[in-house]
Length: 259
Image 1 (tube, rainbow, N blue to C red):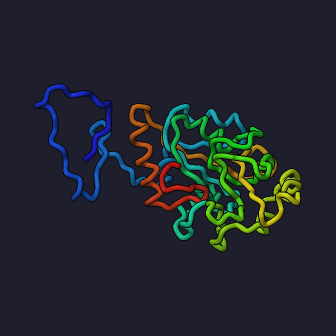
Image 2 (image 1 turned 60 degrees about the horizontal axis):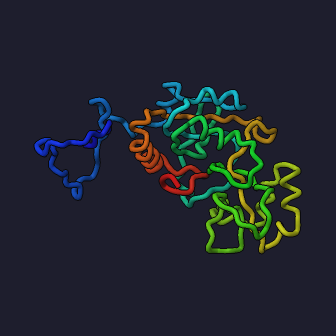
Image 3 (image 1 turned 90 degrees about the vertical axis):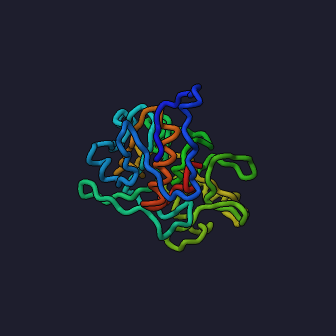
């Protein structure tokens, strides 16, 4: 059994507890305020508790708490690429108000509202940013320059981690990137000779702006599990990891836990 709360230094040696042997333990409980925390919850419980926000523009961000917690991004926008090999272990489709949603990403943040803004309402022209929502090709990258934090869409360097075709379960080919020509700017960028040959390296943009025409006809739903900052650092990582292990790995997540 594991208790979470405000840790206090114990000066009296008689109050020190005996160290618990963990080598033979197979599970543990988390106790919050004398109640056992259910970390085996499904997302429908968050929907029932109305811990959700439908997003269309920046105004809708106010429906997300300005505090820490875990979050899940759902959409009916087609995502046909992935950043992990859990092809047969995706989260189940969730139907909300007769719309079938796919969980494309889940994570944790010290500020849920700010994090979701980085993910889904990113209007910045910067090459890099702090978001794992990698859906469109960045047109600001120049071949041969250094770049960090962006996920690779295509490269001839076989040692680099790149995106996978979710249908073939193979790494994306240069030819398959035609599917990412979602607007004139990206199309022109991918048609340039320096960006359209076997030696090219192409990156995804960090975050998207769902207010743009190519996204706004689809539905975007954020579920969240907000928590007090006193327990956020300890608890959010456990919930994020446990949920992925139990329900499957979303396509746009790269690691089993965090980054």
